[in-house]
Amino acid sequence: MKQMNGTERRAASGEWAVEARGLVKKFGNNRAVDGVDLNVRAGTIYGVLGPNGAGKTTTIRMLATLLRADEGTTRIFGYDVAKDPNIVRQLIGVTGQYASVDESLSATENLVIFSRLLGLSRAESKRKAAELLEEFSLTEAAKRPLKNFSGGMRRRLDLAASLIAQPPLIFLDEPTTGLDPRTRNQMWDTIRRLVKTGSTVVLTTQYLQEADELADRVAVIDRGRVVAEGTVDELKASIGTSSLHLSIQNTQDLQNARRTVERILQVQSAVSPEGGKITAPMADADKVTDLLIALREAGIPLAEMSVQKPTLDEVFLTITGHGVQEDEAETSQKAEEVGA
Amino acid sequence: MNNQSMNPIAGRQLRSKTSLRQSIRHSLTMAYRGLLKIRRTPEQLFDVTLQPIIFTLMFTYIFGGAISGDVQSYLPIIIPGILVQTVITTSVVTGVQLREDMDKGVFDRFKSLPIARIAPLAGALLADTIRYTIATVLTFSMGYVMGYRPEGGLGYVALAALIVIVCSWAISWIFAFFGVIARTASSVQGISMIVLFPLTFLSNAFVPADTLPNWLQWFSKINPISHLVTAVRDLTNSGTAGWDLGISLIGAAVIVAIFAPITVRAYMRRT
Image (cartoon, rainbow over all chains, first blue to last red; front, top):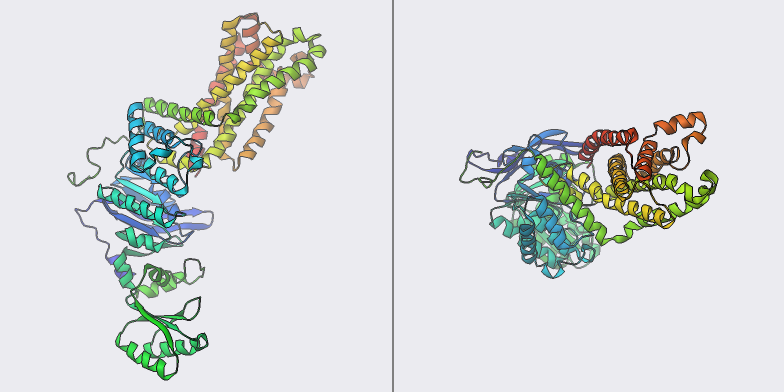
């Protein structure tokens, strides 16, 4: 934890798109966001990763002037969100978790209205709308009311609407939640293209794979706090080792096999919920030889064996101390153990 | 900013405030959005089309004989009364629809755009004046069909219609406020009706105020609805503008002056 925060560099010449300090938001007694710091360098993709209810959306809403922070400050390209909200709004585009477009209107009408609000003339608005619809391959559906749009089309339109003013900073709140794999890949391509044109993207996601695919840096948020921050590689390195996966042929051998693994590798192992698969961190590859011999001597036949590099999934599990669905109260303690 | 050449935001004209002209422009664009929505879902105009027709028929034939002796001589009293009642009741819908609208994701986008904070509200309210206009035209038309011939002439009738629309627009800010602070659309409807029913009925809209008991007369005389009804009667029936018209317009201005800022404030705070 400590060493990861240590990688936070405040280069004097660096250009920060987002600098948030100690953000707090309380809803009643619930501290939905509890002291979040974020630094996002201009021109990068920054991932905010966490399970449902971790405070991602609340954080984004505070950064995007949609919600007033109870404590803490946010600067967007140097402009204070609380003091100059109108300037900040000229620098950002926000795509919400639920499509922030008008259901009862058509795609063109939506884009024209947003363009008009952003100060474009009638003719410019029409041209811009047509241009964006073309770019997001929505031209065919331009005149249909949004009620008949698929989830993917809606998201694309939503993103298109955020790009009208070509804002240098774009917030995407769970841009691919609920999309099928193909549309998700399209959305990822679009986001990568955005950054190539010089935009900065801050996105939230609960999909570790998504953060892995897209983000230059990631902040892991859990219960309103940043529990880890760094590049994806740094995060993976923080739990260090690759892991060993063993499938055994007879499930009745499972406990016995697990004991053998833990005795020889001197580590904690885990058993997959489907059963029959043991996972353990592999710090020393040499010891695997000992393990395999020990297993044969104990008469436990293996079905399969593989070594995997750590995934963000495991990073997440290790850092937060609980799975994405699980809910335990030992989070902060485990998080500290990781840093130590 | 520190590094101009690297700065992705260099060369952007950043304004820290929206000017009045921009605010008006933004509000008009939002009103255009409201009109588009009405065009897409014309069924939401049922209330403003059916209510004037049914109420005018109903009240005139029920009360006409009892109050004025016959239907014909009741028309100059009831048509302005029905008009004010119908159009103001219509303004409740503004609050209800605003609540529904605000619960949708699109309002998040409006809030994140560099536009005047008042625009989404003002625009929605402005678009609803089309509803008031429909209700007004239909009420007068119904009256005409039933034999109402206002002596003030067409010009004064148009002026009266305009004043009713303006006042209803002002009053709709009250319901917009309820719309912003209420949790659900149906509670907006509930609160608004409780406020509106006594106001429209405890007035001179349907009966001459001097037939009421003393305490009720007192209320009916200070009731702003009564002033508006009287102003409309003066204009349509005799082509005169009296003090009642002044009070109505001042009242409308006061309502906007109070409710527009607190509604916008509440809207800003609401997430």
